[in-house]
Picture (tube, rainbow, N blue to C red):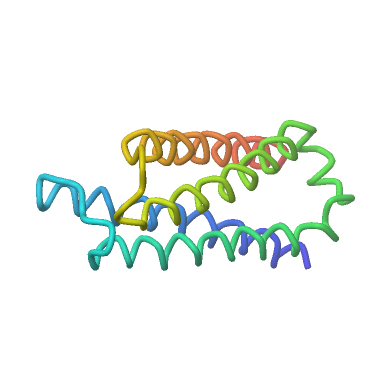
Length: 136
């Protein structure tokens, strides 16, 4: 069961990177942001929702392994950063789904919040992984 927890975490991390790359590649290619209903944004939404599902799967699969020496050895920061990353991922998805509305009021502020949560997700996931790798 521990292997499932580990691999589900790496799949979730890879999905985070893939989801982040979609709008970045769009911005580099076109030189501007994609429209809310465009193909790149639809792809970003699908990959993002898949990422959220993988994060949830990882959370569920890791629960039985929380008492293992590896999990305990990683310390409280590994668990706290994981919880923060999951919370941020849910908030990020909510903001992203709001951004799909072409008539959204205060789009610039929501977009900044969406970007901020993305950066914070990357940071908290990095802390989580580093703490687990240090524990061995």
